[in-house]
Amino acid sequence: MPDPHHAARQHCRSLQDALDGLGRQELGRITDWGRHLAAVLPAGGRLLAAGNGGSAAQAQHLTAELVGRYHDERPAYSAIALHAETSSVTAIANDYGFEELYSRQVAAHGRPGDVLVLLSTSGRSPNVLAAADTGQAVGLLVWAITGPRPNPLAVRAHDALCVDSADTATVQEAHLVAVHLLCEAFDTECPAPERLTATVRRAVT
Image (cartoon, rainbow, N blue to C red):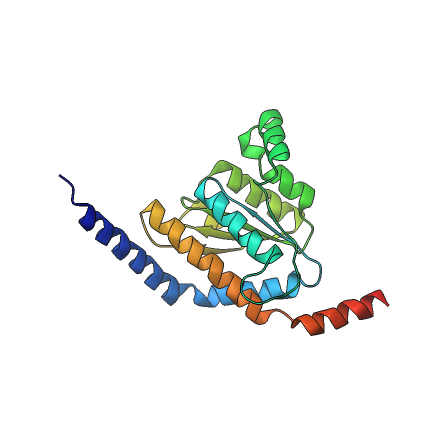
């Protein structure tokens, strides 16, 4: 009979290994992404995010932290989880097929200079790959958050954060940590609220 304690220990060990790799290999990339978002979003740019299943939940978690807040009080920024608008999702899937689910929304909402974050544990989901291609075509900066390299999404993105684990649950758990680290980096690099308010006031007057 399987030992549940052994399985739990193995799960924790797998997650610890993935987080160790994230800390060694990806912190610089996450900091750079946060710095870039801190230049784009306060200037009126937008972040679009998409994924399937658990990755959709991670995408929505990221956008919620940006529209709301992560730790400290700050202005709201434009961020859209593309799976969350159910009428558009079901209409697009019905009329154009599931593969076009995100690419059509990227074409509708994305503007040159915006950021598209695509999450996929496998890096092989056809609708996410199509979104990456559309994002590139309309001038968005495309970031991928995936499982192990090599994978097609990492190749099609401008930059990719890849979690080196063969276990899907471990990859998803590490992705959540990466999302929080990205929000932390964004908040650290973001203009102070009082400076941002002054900038907006000057622009209006």
